[in-house]
Length: 309
Image 1 (cartoon, one colour):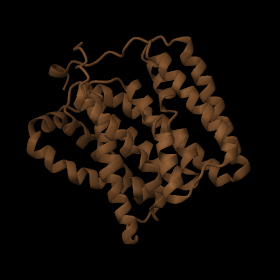
Image 2 (cartoon, rainbow, N blue to C red; image 1 turned 45 degrees about the horizontal axis):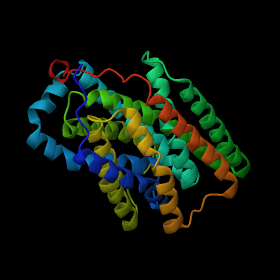
Image 3 (cartoon, rainbow, N blue to C red; image 1 turned 180 degrees about the horizontal axis):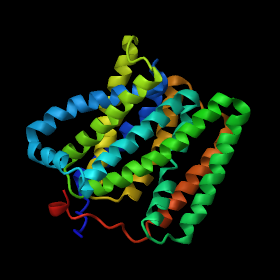
Image 4 (cartoon, one colour; image 1 turned 120 degrees about the horizontal axis):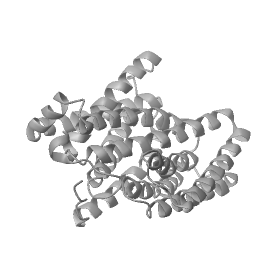
């Protein structure tokens, strides 16, 4: 197994940009006057439109090899990552529309908990602190969603969707970590976003979700989501996955919780409801304990890039 490359200034800079960019996602979704599924679909279509010419022009051989060898581990991981990303977007984006920015962002940020369970399924032993953190996070999620049960059934449904988005996000990051061991950022993100976009287009067509007829401000918001959270956020995290673990990426995603909440409050006036704050705080505490405990666990095996493509 090849050693993980050293973390340098470019990686650190990419992570800083990614955290800031991803924090814009929730507020932009709440602002855009369009169906959640349509927003998720278009941001991926626009991302593929931006990345595909670059991938074809600079990574044609690698891209062709990945497409031809879809049964190989790295290629299969890229395809499955795209499918998991589609599930993430199809649940998280509509979830923000149904519940508040703060609650939805906190619930989707349970991703490190599910990342820890995925590691357990891979045969890695997890420290006791991880299980303690999972308990805190689950209790926090119950408190946060319990508040929304009394608040409205719509908000509770949004909470469940956001929580599902967190689980799908963990699966997406886990597959991405394996895929990035043998592919470039450009090739991996192009394949991943293409699969995601195709799945979401199909879901929109089956569900009868309108993909047009929106105001100019909504299209600008979707373009901003593509440039910010998608290309600068997800893509920069994908770049960093070659040098940092999926668990480290997951803990950095926690910074989206206060970031999105602050932006949503200042820009859209969506202050968190006071009776939600204890649950959100306990949830974030639990996720932090999970991440700190998982840092002591053995690293996941990485695929050799040369012969696994």
